Length: 486
Image (tube, rainbow, N blue to C red; front, side, top):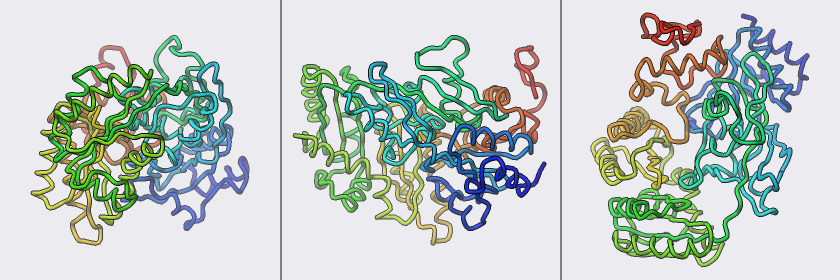
């Protein structure tokens, strides 16, 4: 394997000196993504400005046997863009051009460094928007959204990133530029597009993305409901969905999350609330009016002590301001925190929230809950002070126990943040060894040398010539002649 200094020399020749960083202090800028308690200084950084730059960097890595990791805005919360100490970090944030807004075709073509919210702003003049809206949509990039299959508040009704991507231009781990999907939906053959979206950079790097644009709704109504506790709020959520109403968003915050939001942005949520719901309906005006009356009635029946309907866009923005700021706001009440991400069946919300409260009480580790209640996607914020001996370890333990709760109730270890480096160790809790081996075979078909974002998603590498893990004997698919073991 060539040394990084030799690789840096090659890349400076091919890409230009200004696109290659090897100064130790400058490299530290990229030592983590949004999961800041995992840090690795990359061996080298390439600032890509074009598909050709990405392909050249990947080819160089492939030739030298050096691992590479792609990074967009660095807002990921599972360590998916955590660098490799002996590898190259390919930074995509300068590839930020919106190449096409096709309103008649309801699609846009963008580079991966384009910020999520910028797509909506570019499409707004024609009455369209880009539906997937992570809480970080003002800063997160489309390429990262594709890698992690990101969601957001409105994904209950409109689906995740995978439901809004029509095609990608893609650099595979050998440095080849390929096109997958296109401008029309449902290309023939294997669903490679569905495989790539959410693959967390382990199959290659998207360098251009064609996304669907959604027609802006005729009417939007937003409601803030205050409850005494999360039990009552959870019952309201279940009642709304059971009534056949699919809101654009149903978000819940508990008392500690409300406290943090009030301290940070003074959003004016109901005083004394143990939980609040933000419920938003959109669609044809007649449908929204009818369903909104049902939502208010169901919240009343579940015990809401205050209902506040946004009278205009300014009041709607204020209601959302508290929810959208919650993750950052928690920094006001705790110096450090882990943003956990797990999924449970919606009907289990009251039981699981009580169990999380019990974990918090028993461990002394505070947990604030702010999450997408409509689809059971929890985001517990596990608070700690890293300056206190053992506090980080205690928070990690509680964070893992929350994932155990999700699995015990038939849920998942992640909803929209990805597995990354953070949750790879939890994958065997959810999948069998054969499940994981089958996923590895897919990964190996793209990346036989295991260079593309290694150390993410999979708990122990087994196939592709990587260090053998706990798998023993031939894989069942290999024995059946259905797959090849590299």
